[in-house]
Amino acid sequence: MTNIGVVMTDSNLDKVEQLIADGLVYHDAGEIEKARDAYLQALDLDPENAKALDLAGLLCMQCGEPEAAEEFYRSAINIEPDNTRFSLHLGILYLEQNDFEKSEEILRKVIEQEPDHSDARLYIALGMRAKGERDAARALLEAAEELNSDNASYKKWLGLLSLETGDLVTALDYTNRSIELDPLDISVYSQLGTILNEMDDHQLAEKCYTSGLKVDSQDMHCRAGLAGTLIKLGKLDEAENELRQAVELGGEQHPLVLSLSALLDAFADKKRDAQSKIESALSTDAASLEILLIAYEVMQNIEEEKKAEDILNTMQNIAPDDARVMSALLG
Image 1 (cartoon, rainbow, N blue to C red):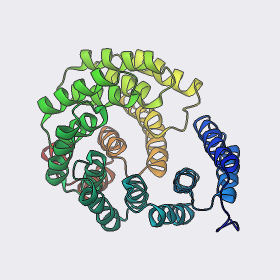
Image 2: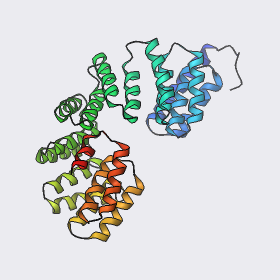
Image 3: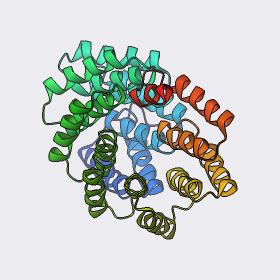
Image 4: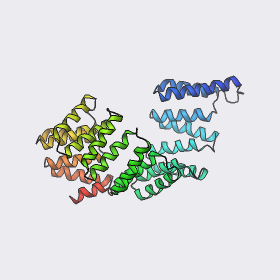
């Protein structure tokens, strides 16, 4: 980027725009190296092109290079300080690094510049949720939804927050509306299945997961959710078949698949296999409440009371006010 001060000709401007357009096509197609080359070529021709700087920052975030991403975003902000898109991306970067204070500071400035900015409220809310401030997070998400009532993502997150606080009726309503707005979001089917299982409507949960697998038959979360629901219904052979299909699709080491396989082993009195699998699942994802809840059930079933108690303590530390954790505490 050594051409600062060079006057841009119309042909160079056209070339920069084309390079950015090419980069976006490569980026969307997952051709990361080609996208990077296109953005860098654009910046060689126009080092102060804020759009190219921002896109290069997004690429660095995707590639796990947060320091480079921050530099690109800050350069874009310096060039176009009134463009809230760049500050939003910087706030999201800090959120992904669990730097909640910096993230909120940047995102609050976005709202100062653009009072009706709903996405800034969403990402502040996600930071608050991560800190356990669910009431404040919910209030911000409700404000975001009022500003953009057609956004499926806001409803999905409101559904999840309602699930976590034990408000299952509201969780069901928000999640259903999210699916209506975006029926191709596979993650919402898993969320809806979880809510229905919490409401003890396992048959409807089974139908929900089956619908999700019609959207994406290879989604491990949805297939594992179906297996877990079949276990609740006592259809152990069908559950085993779903887990077998998950393994055939490459999900042998997926923590949810391992956890539910461990639960089936626990029911079959295969204590050693059950413990080995659940410990392997926890070593992969020890912070997932979903995995921990299954692990707690496994340890209780194989009569590992001390380990069950340790898992319960871990859940209390991670999500002390989650309704499902409180239910486990009450026995």
